[in-house]
Amino acid sequence: MIDFGKSLKRAQETKNINSSDLARSLGVHRQQINIWRNKKNCRLDTAVKICTALDYKLDDFITL
Image (tube, rainbow, N blue to C red):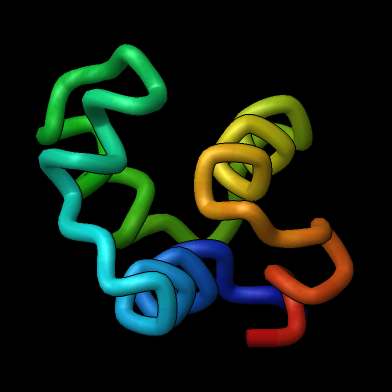
């Protein structure tokens, strides 16, 4: 099973982008990023938006 939050944390570390900057690029509050970082799963459209913002392909993101 894929752990979305874990993948998000690793992607942020790899791309060296903090939650505030990611939130700004997605048009959401920083708290929303922190919520996502602690979730095991998410909606597909959310994952696609995050992958786009972090310049990841979805398949690469979920294998982080």
